[in-house]
Length: 182
Image (cartoon, rainbow, N blue to C red; front, top):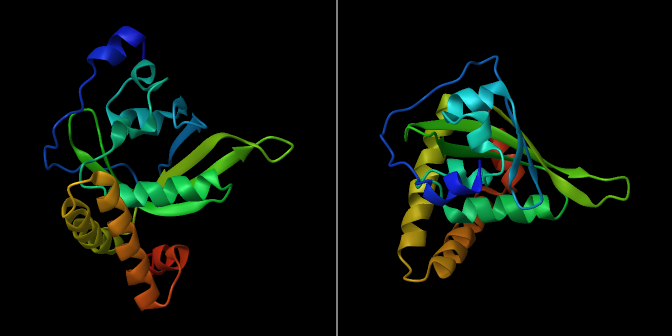
């Protein structure tokens, strides 16, 4: 997106409507180390509602839905910044303000020396029962985040709450995500 367009871009308001993409479709994007979009496939362009030129050069967070807890994105970024892959359920928001759920697989792109060059994400249609469970969990984590006047403390408290929930279930984060698929 040209700099003059970025300056006037405004995040849409959520409509409460859900958008869907096909079971046989995969959303693909690539970003640099800072999460700036460098590639978007046609499925991504279509579901996002943005043109390719609007997406290029924008932070991937252009799709962030306010129903997504910050602690989940912190976990995602901490994991991929450490050179590890992660699977996550994410509620995104398109240009119109409609939301869409994805089951995301995010991996670092490495050079020959193992240095992170950027990130690659494939997103597929999530299991609907998993979406319901994640929606409930995310609502709870958002309440924890919102119970603090400082957003960083709220994010940390919600992250701790997520880890305690997983500990209570006796699973790691990845195990939890994979358990939702069955």
